[in-house]
Amino acid sequence: MLLNLMRKHAKSWLIKALVAIIAAVFIFYFGYSFKSDSGSKVASVNGEPITGVDYQKTYRSMLESLQREYKSVWNENLVKLFNIKGRALETLIGQKLVSQEAKRIGFEVTEKEIQDQILSYPAFQTGGRFDEGRYKALLANNRMSPEDFEAGLEREIFQRKIEQFLGTFVTVTEQDALDYYTYSNEKVKLGFIEFLPENYKGSVKISDEAMEKYFQENQEKYRVPEKVKAAYILFDPKSFKEKVRANEKDIQEYYNENIGMFKEEKEVKVSQILFKIAEDGPADQDAKVREKAESILNKARKGEDFAALARKHSEDPSKKDGGDLGYLQPGEMVNPVEEAVSKLKKGEISEPVKSPFGYHIVRLDDVKDARTVPYEEAREKIASRLENQASIDLAYDRALSFHDQVPYDTNLGQFASEQKMSAAESDFFPMGEPIPGIGGDRKLAESIFSLQQGDTSEVLEVDGKFYIFQVVDRKQSALPALSEVRDRVKEDLVEKLAAEEAKAAAQKLLERAKAGEEWSVLSKEAPKKAQTTEFFSRQSPAPELGYDQALLEAAFAMNEKKRYPDSVFETDKGVFVIRYEASESIDKAKFEGEKAQYRQMLLRTRHRVLVQNWLEELRKKAEIEVLIPAAKEGLEF
Image (tube, rainbow, N blue to C red; front, top):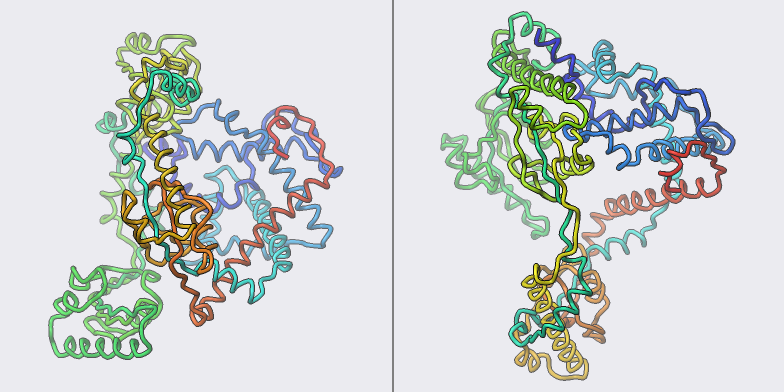
């Protein structure tokens, strides 16, 4: 049966519903343990042991998390690359430190707190209410018992309480908030003269000796990266589609087991005309905009075409569609608009409704009541989904079966030919580039590059297709001879010398400006005339100047008494001489309106730093003994 085939590969859509939850608590729930000496002590923290059981479970949970992340390109070499053993032990040591300190302070987590957390997860709900059967099914699909999951939640709540406790020691005064707001919002305007390196390339002369010297000093820049050539066999699910058909029993069973997927929320079809209100508009702006909205509302209620009025007057992107916003579910509209729509009957138009975006005139065009999609209506889509998934599973099955038959140290192409299958071969490719003819991302390249020549990969997924790779040839990284990269070296050296000339010319002009020569006179002598930026803040640097932290700091350090910096600045845009023109102070009234927001941002930043520092201090003071060398090698403390 198709459903059994899907279950065999654990490709349940239920797993996807749990991803967000697992991301938060994965380091606290545990899968099955190894068959090793799991009762032994692997480490101790201030005399408290970390057992082999705990270590193996945490290692396994991290390993499975990594396998989910790298599922399409997984191979065992990635375990070492990502130092899972060391990270697992570090996690347990951190948990011990937090737990010990929490007990010392006097914290605890109650059963009710854990229960409330579970009840709050939408993934465990059906129709907005907690569904125990769904809860257990979702956990079972992820090889978790309720006890393990709840233990993870307990640790998560514990951690949150500790962080909240530490947050009580964080303060932000009104002056702190003002300083932070000022730093983020004060603005400056600069004059600048740009010196472009390309303007100096024509005057650059290069000798063979200079080129040789530059090449010798920068050889690594021209290093040819390691490259591999891979043979591969493709198992494309599309080629298996004709071999699978969903029968009625499978379709009905899927519908019954996933009935929640076929529940549709109430939807309303809405059209609107929006009249925006500018944040920094005049005091009488609100009244004028509302008056305009009421004028258009009167026209609509007198029978003028709503869509035509929207196209002419609305300031929302939906104006091109006559204001049509389509069908919307609860939560997809801003609260004031959603509340107004809830009071309308089909065809009615609301009074002007104010939101943070402005004034809305809203018409209710249609209502679709909440319902469960009937089986007959859902049948075709379910069949298509089952068949697509089954073809994927079948392709994966065939790939696994073939992989298991490949003898060790056997030429993949030759073996494929013996099995009456065809193998292909890529061109050489480096780590950072897609595989020719296949594509893929860096993760795939990392997986293939981790293979030794002649090794065969696990079954890897690329864009929904399954591959088995074998490295058939490898070119080691090498330094080229100058003759092989002469044109590149010459181009780079010309670029470097031209930039140096541009910088020297800019520095001379800056010294003359600081000595008192007129900016306007210097501008006429420069390769490009002086320009002026708009006012800009630290958060939004002037785009004409490119981004350079030193330039940004200098810009806000200058004033009427010190119009010039100490040096010129080289950015990705060129070399610049800058000059202070004017400053724009913050708007105190606007600060009052945003003070709470900035205070919260500063509180969060200080809280995060405090928690990090607190954990570091716990580590420094702790007596930590590690007894397993494999994990100890990867520790970072």
